Image 1 (cartoon, helix red, strand yellow):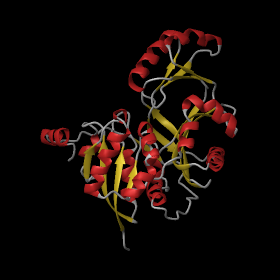
Image 2 (image 1 turned 90 degrees about the horizontal axis):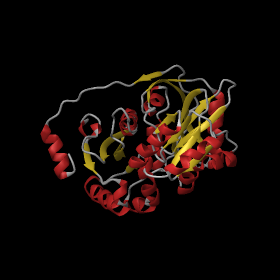
Image 3 (image 1 turned 180 degrees about the vertical axis):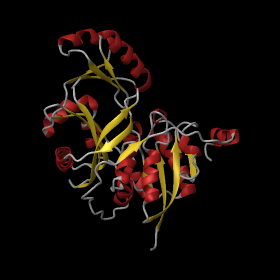
Image 4 (image 1 turned 90 degrees about the vertical axis):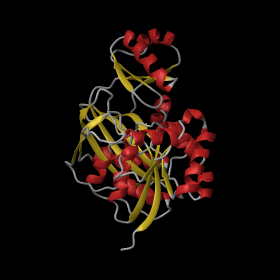
Length: 348
């Protein structure tokens, strides 16, 4: 069989206790027998572990943080493309998606393919707009409120009862049991991700998630539901198991149909004792636990690559129930010269 040669650039190489999706996305792509791939890792920080995973990443480049502006990021991508001839680029962080979505046509004119949500899709599912999103698409969502000042915190008692959730606009969420904790989490998140801060009603139940892929025309290419078995102090799944839950799948398929969702997504839900599903977050990209879907029979990263290349992709109809994933820590041994090379030259 002739395997298609592809150069694929991937961000999100921070495979730590708050892992990015990049490494599991790369693993899924490398598992696909249709591709002969060269993986170009794009890293923001010189200590992202994926930079040094030579069996997964063929070459790594440092790129400027989104806060440096879209011009700086795109200029760096142009340089990397001039060397590597990138066929497909897969961004994996919420904070960088806006720049890549806006530059989609420019990237395509260079020969770089992406498959991302539209700006409208990206904007309307923001945590700050989730109540309006729920009303528009007939979804159950917790009550929420955006805060731009700590002065607003003491008025929350009139609208919410404790505990409640304090969330950043991109990442991080904490359960607060009193006003002092809200102030502390507000300041902590604001320093890292800026304003606004989202306050969300706490819904009691079981946290469940779905990873899904939409083709941009209302069709679901794949979807796998999961229940977290082990959760870190950052709220990240460190273990999970695939579920047989047709209600979750139907909710996902309906949402993709109504929104015409394009690209990967993760639905974070709370299943209550009376089997109601509250959407607490919609992440507009593939999540870090996506390799569980690959292991269960749906290679969504590989399907995403094919969609980016405008190929026809047959939807997945089944997956294996009861498949588990468990993350673990692993000490890689390298040399300070590797770190120095990447820090000074910006590539390795």
